Amino acid sequence: FLGAGLIAALGWTLGTACGAMAGSLLPMSVRLSLGALLYGMFIAIIIPPARKERGVLFTVIIAAAISILFKYVFTAVSGGFAVIISSVTAAAVIALIAPVKEEEECR
Image (cartoon, rainbow, N blue to C red; front, side):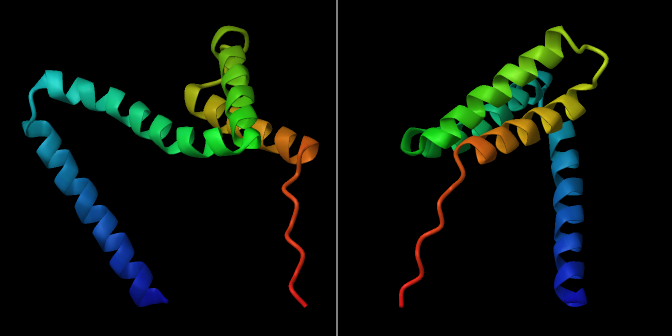
């Protein structure tokens, strides 16, 4: 377990260092566009399951609405905490309203 964790931590650290060094070599226009790319990646992860399951779609909508509240109403909360609070609250609301039904075990 320690060996696997050590290898993963070493890979993560080296990957981060290489990315930081490579990023410093890129022009500013490319670095700024990579920030928008991150949002696009998250949208690409969310859209396919949201098309198939209404619960995922409603969770995303609720999280976005709560996030907007934090942006314009509860401005004292930092952006990072707002994202965490929005996502956890939206997931909890949907889990209470429409829990996922477990499949019956085969006998």
